[in-house]
Image 1 (cartoon, rainbow over the protein chains, first blue to last red):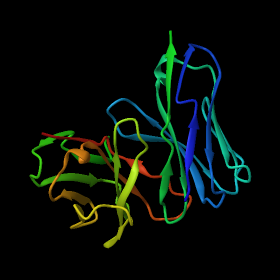
Image 2 (cartoon, rainbow over the protein chains, first blue to last red; image 1 turned 45 degrees about the vertical axis):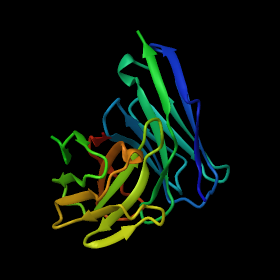
Image 3 (cartoon, rainbow over the protein chains, first blue to last red; image 1 turned 120 degrees about the horizontal axis):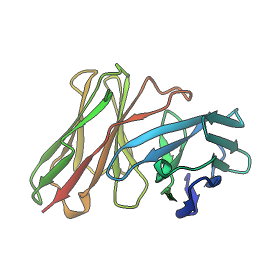
Image 4 (cartoon, rainbow over the protein chains, first blue to last red; image 1 turned 180 degrees about the horizontal axis):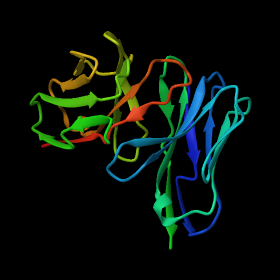
Length: 111
Length: 114
């Protein structure tokens, strides 16, 4: 059974700092991995999707990497801003769009 | 412009009283999903529709049902809500089930049980 773990559970940083969020999964047989952002009381916003054959994806200040063989992904946020404060979730696609989610990292960026 | 719309945003119902949550989409996507997310937990897939084909997850309680009358709408019916069903319910869509398609989520409906 696929299990997804995110470390740390919470992170607090000052504005401008670069940071890395970690995601690990137990079964390397995945089709893709997605990173989402969730604001309090809201749904999920897709940030990046990495196919199983890819190593990384970039969007603006965000860079996500995938090492499928070791079961790890990282989300790198450059020059963090207070508006980046949210919970970040990773999810692995185990086939037919079945997503298994981690419990997320709650990020707080202080001015 | 909201593309996956969930109504209502907040729903309060009584223990055992049937409740229906609604999801609509303007993306014309083939696949629609329902997730349950309890406080501080990961979203958990309940079921999904690929077009009219219903796919139930093995551990989804029988208390939860779904209807998809057309491409745009999907409903989640909880026949006899218990206190443990209080959660955020998220609807999502995707173009199809291909691995290159991201899922698009609505803002969710937060369900409270009295």
